[in-house]
Image 1 (spheres, helix red, strand yellow):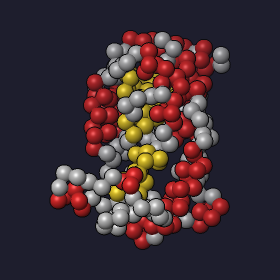
Image 2 (tube, rainbow, N blue to C red):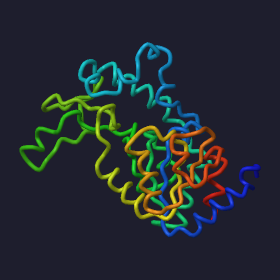
Image 3 (tube, rainbow, N blue to C red):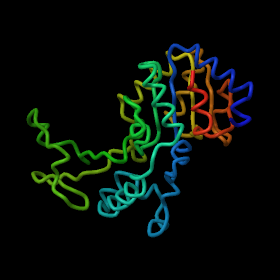
Image 4 (spheres, helix red, strand yellow):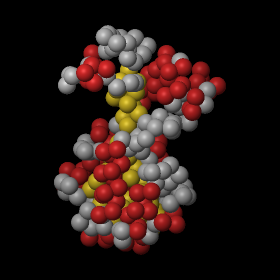
Amino acid sequence: MTNVLMSEEVVQARLWLREAQHITMLTGAGMSSESGVPTFRDAQTGHWARFRPEDLATEAAFRRDPERVWRWYAERRQNTGGVQPNAGHLAVAEFQRRFPGRLTLATQNVDGLHQKAGSTEVLALHGNLFEDKWLDPCALARRSQDACFVGQAEPGVPPRCAHCGNMVRPAVVWFGESLPMHAIDAAQQAARTCQAMLVVGTSGVVYPAAGLAHLAREAGAKVIIVNPEPTELDDVAHLVLRDTSAQVLPMLLEI
């Protein structure tokens, strides 16, 4: 057990979490980096070093050069697919198993590690790297109740619909796109109604996700930040624990 886990701050955080009828958690890239997942910008290595992420993660970039963007995401999937959840992911999943419905989990990460750890009903605010969707709305669905299944697209770089040529794209949120409405609405509702909020491994600069901490604080919840580095949300928090999620979460959630 490290010194931070013995601190008065951790004891206080555990008490708040124990007393909370509902907990909301927001996780970011720092949590995944502990498992070895490259951050978004760290993925710019080798051949891709000459491109800015903004030149690859936009709808305009995909329409301009779909093969290039698809190959970049294919490499990201390959590099991330074998990564395993760390102790922080496992602690969250175990807490959800022991206390069904008590913790709402929203994540900015697209790597699926929370799901791999066993968490269910994860609010993936920025989508999922390992899922696909159509670039444009299915034309068949506009004419009838049937829509082409993206998994049946013809193989290619990228895959395309055999009927209309619609391209398949990664089901992630690109620059300039809105977050999935159902996910952000559910996360905001959870932030407004929780008694404690954990903000883990996120710098707090990307909105509207970072706004969840503000909503929770304004509604009277105790806000706890877990991050080894300073964040833009430190002033919003009641407690800031300067350690990694893999170190702290197993103790915080063992209540």
